Length: 269
Image 1 (cartoon, rainbow, N blue to C red):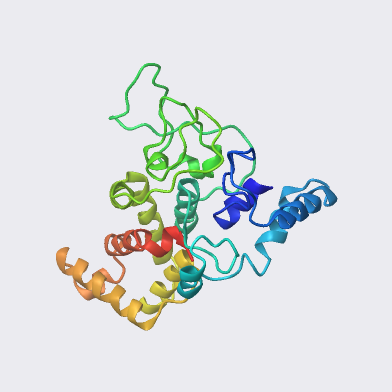
Image 2 (cartoon, one colour; image 1 turned 60 degrees about the vertical axis):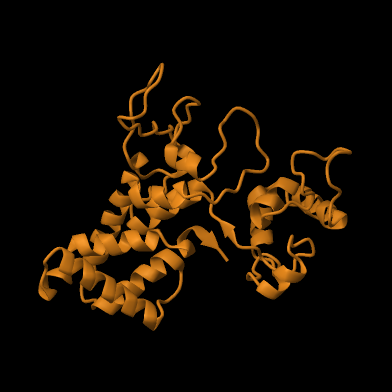
């Protein structure tokens, strides 16, 4: 239950999620931890039921707050929801979702990991599809000697030992991966194709739809203006006239790629 709280709220009720012993930290809210464990048992040991109860609570639905963060920087008193970066698996699944490629089927065999020509080593397996057949990240096969570079960049643990709390890094390799990884660029192209296939939408409506897809909110007027300015600049680079670039997959792909590379796409407030 402490690890579940840690994954949902970013900090365990016992901060040392792998150590409940004397060398670990005491719980910040021992009665709360006991209550959650009791509810888990009372509801038939159902993780789904408990997760639903926690994520619909007022505490979980609080926003990030600079004033509260300055008073309670470690959020011990649950005064706000800290800004959290999505895990690598969730980032990959989010990209598949907005592109329309995500395969929602549950269960089934795992999908071999995609290997590039730079991936070498003893016992190299056959490479899987670039997009993992659209399957969610939990269905990607894991081989300890051939791990996904994208997942490693976003702190997916090396599967040698159990890890209760992942590292949280913020390094240049992460934005560089979102800029250059062939999986990301291919899904940006699919996203652009999906948006262009929707008829009877003007430019502003298409941009607004992409904001709803990526950020679950409407685009602000200045963001629409920035998007139009960016696409006009890209059209000039490609020597496209207005009638051409409005429906150019190349221009919309570039814009989709830009949205994937924004901080708001991979961070939760």
